[in-house]
Image (cartoon, rainbow, N blue to C red):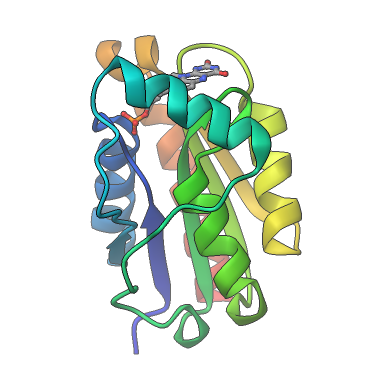
Length: 161
Ligand SMILES: Cc1cc2nc3c(=O)[nH]c(=O)nc-3n(C[C@H](O)[C@H](O)[C@H](O)COP(=O)(O)O)c2cc1C
């Protein structure tokens, strides 16, 4: 049985890049949270920020994997106005009882990582075993890889324990 599940939402590909690298390293299953409605473009940018601030729920498609079947679920979100993205908040509200252990990762422009991951922990109902964040600049320069290795090692130790 697979032990790690990586669940993420990504509007423009940054969080997806981290999610894929993690799944690759850990041999984890990958669960993109999908919505029927697009968030591309400037109008949807502002809608997304408003919704995240208001704590609104998104209409997300049914998940492929059951998080209850995994030892640890890695939750990945872009930072939206210092909040988790609404698809991630919606997933957590629906699945928090099924999560045995969690780790959090976010991508961002530059500020709000700690607040966002604290809110993800709150929504998950448990402390994260490990946390990781990468800014757009770090992603472009490749500087995020070292932090990612440390984060993946912490998860691997937990799963191996
Ligand atoms: C609605 C919205 C709000 C955002 N708010 C923040 C913010 O508060 N702080 C920040 O550093 N970046 C913010 N960003 C930038 C994203 O967090 C960043 O571009 C992230 O890497 C996008 O991930 P993605 O490509 O997986 O969607 C925001 C982006 C969007 C769309």
